Length: 263
Image (cartoon, rainbow, N blue to C red):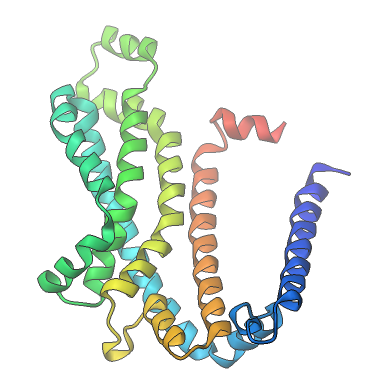
């Protein structure tokens, strides 16, 4: 079997096994517990029944995820550049970045609601906080891991600090940056969902998937709840696919990871 067929057949076979196991577990449950695990058919039906609500909520969640993700990319790039250019800045700021990462985001939700109000602004900030750390850490690591011999070569040619950053360190850091970007792209819809759940608002039909999950849970619509989770998963795939496509466009002509896969 060719590698291309394997990449199609093996995931499809795994998916079929998971669905079969899902139906089997549902069948093994007692009648009074089956509602807790709706079948894939029931989930698809819930998709159709609640399509309008899920689509509206998905658009609102996507908006918060995109804004928070974009803000994290911009701010982390400036932070990474500052951290990479000065050892003193790294020593001074990195512990506080670690503290920010280790603080549960859910703790910030009530504070953000007081500061900026419930809704899109709070969701955007929560998404930003979740996406920021992997971006700044990976990008900084890439900027400080530039080949020492190339750095010495640039110094020998008496290039300026700006030229060294633009023409050497930034290109060398791109694979690390895209690694952080892939992680952040996976986390962005989750961050927006958490933001919706903890600091979202339904005012003006602004509720996202997290807010919709609260509604379906309170109404005991478990199939719709599974459909909401699946919608969030689809958003994650879309974000990740976009980043992977961008990464391929930028890196495939010169980076070893893509050159090796093409052989």
